[in-house]
Image 1 (cartoon, helix red, strand yellow):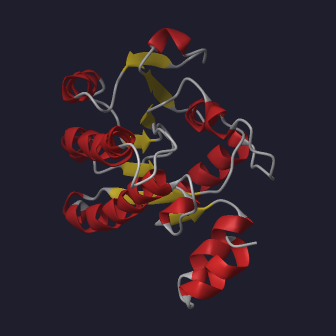
Image 2: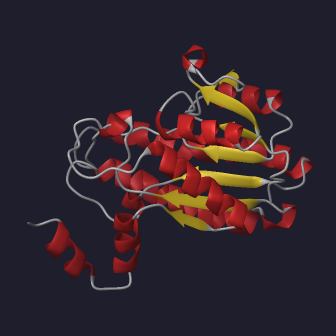
Length: 234
């Protein structure tokens, strides 16, 4: 588990949205923070160390792991949503899998030895309520986040021997650039960050941020026809 007295964290996608909010909340809790982004010059968090990182580029991932050798908390927040459908543009589907699944796994593989050397630590993978359902226009994203979720489950077994704790985070809509144009209720990124880090500190396996995500998760134990007819065919 992360030593919360003096944690050292690397947060991906830390220049905006949930990643920036998590990095800011970590700083407020006394953490040392590497704020990683493809364009590190856009990181605007006093006290954080900007790091150039493209999680879909293995060389970039390796360089980050070689730089941040004191990390005991890895927050895999970076992700993309292209709007690709599974029967549409395959380039979009591949791009989402390359970032949301393969890129996240690349980070875990690179930083697992770092975490082991620092006592085990914690990995946080930001998934989605869309790990558990899908809707038109989010097919590729939902598949990539479902893979991200079960990756966390698998990693929990594979990393247990080195004492690394794995947390999966699930939420619906948040006030991020990805959700521009969405008119429904949204959770503030700062609230996502607070609930996520509170869950990490409590040793949670999953952090389910909002009521919508709780409802979706609960629906998995029921006939899927009930969920899809009620929520997606209106």
